Image: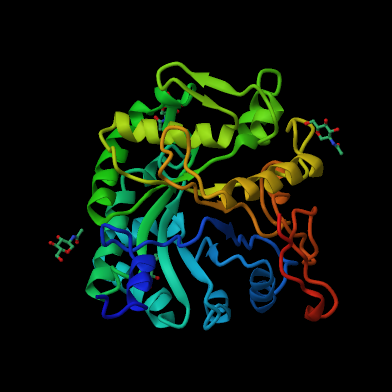
Length: 363
Ligand SMILES: *[C@@H]1O[C@H](CO)[C@@H](O)[C@H](O)[C@H]1NC(C)=O
Ligand SMILES: *[C@@H]1O[C@H](CO)[C@@H](O)[C@H](O)[C@H]1NC(C)=O
Ligand SMILES: *[C@@H]1O[C@H](CO)[C@@H](O)[C@H](O)[C@H]1NC(C)=O
Ligand SMILES: *[C@@H]1O[C@H](CO)[C@@H](O)[C@H](O)[C@H]1NC(C)=O
């Protein structure tokens, strides 16, 4: 006989079967980037997210006005430790402890901070000086959470771009770059110990834009297509995102990590771009994001890992007018800076008076 019938499901929801904390509790999350001078206030963002029924959110820093606005809302947030702080955190356990106290502990439990992303796309990235300090920063931040008894509340991770991989086609052949491996392996060993997932920023858009002559856009957009066949796995792929996730699983397996879960921490499609960026338009962005929502709502795994339900944070909530680089960088938002939708995938924008906000349509 069950003594606490209501407590058990709650407990299972909160922790994985292995007893580790899990930062991503749903399957559809969103990145709330804020490199813009014209986007809605954090309070309006809360309204927008609640109306869209999006509960899992990532930010790229630990902005206090955002953490304050999220207090008492039930939104689950992953904060970011910016790359510029990695050296500092890695050099001193005391700095790491202060950072976690000031930016995480103070806001708990009312603001549901569920994770800390330590650095963003560090390994394989341009700033080689950070490659060697990432693990030290991760360990110091983890130790700080332990000291504060928060290691069962916030999960420590770091997001990786495709630059960590040497090859990724076909998925089964994927391996980490030789020069990344010596930094990646000890990092993964640590993440394995503390039960953290491998976080992947995966962009079929970027793959398509880099080789539009040879890549079928329907494959990148989850549209009907022949797809590809992986002769080693003997598996068929009908969309590129699944193939990219399985490539990450293959790289992990090739490095000896057979049990680690892959979570997509960023994916999206730009609704505008430079001349050189093939496929960056609103029609394709809508198709990608609409089909992605349907894909995630199925709560299914990938061909190679059918039991690991695909979870992804969309990039991004808003178009961000102050981002550098290609024009696409400013145009990933599901919403425009004024809070209206960029294109219709079933969400409703902020408009005059929040009473007009409707919940999302059933897909
Ligand atoms: C290092 O981190 C501590 C704690 O967050 C902070 O007070 C200090 O200003 C940081 N130093 C630098 C150089 O960023
Ligand atoms: C983390 O804390 C443990 C003890 O709780 C200690 O053994 C270990 O050396 C610490 N690691 C770092 C990187 O400070
Ligand atoms: C690492 O290897 C890749 C692929 O060979 C290369 O493009 C990159 O420049 C190398 N990076 C460093 C920092 O050595
Ligand atoms: C968007 O790009 C696709 C090719 O990727 C093209 O077929 C389509 O016409 C474009 N749509 C618009 C509105 O420009």
